Image (cartoon, rainbow, N blue to C red; front, side):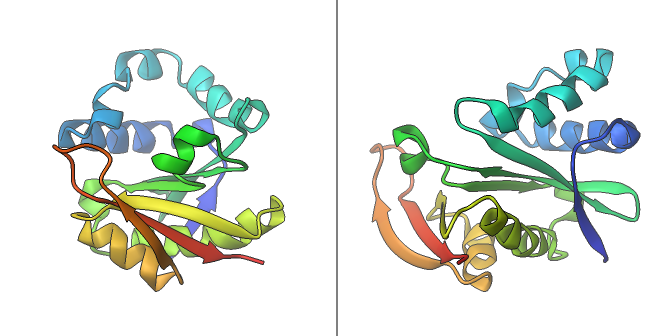
Length: 168
């Protein structure tokens, strides 16, 4: 599968909406809270908001993974971190559309994102994932992630893993 990271664009509307529905239906909190009705109603505003994040308090570059004109995942590169992002989030976050998992999408997205992070002035990036997320652990480690810490953030949650990847 030939995968390309692209800036959000209206031309991918239908494919992105399909992917967002799949992600929402999976039930993860950060996808359940997405207002798909509002996005469907004004997809142009959704794209504009994603593109404008580069100028926010914590600047972020949002990219969509496209394969054969299909939206297969999303990735965000935060240009800096605040205290909350150092605990949960890190510099790079990504999601693969469920129907495209197991095909190397996340590994390829992260691999393509690392040189972009370098162009944003980062010399290393922090990535976090739950200790129970074997797929994300593999993605990060396949891209050179070095485990630097694990923390228990709350008694009812799995350990949080903290990885660093040198991009200098």
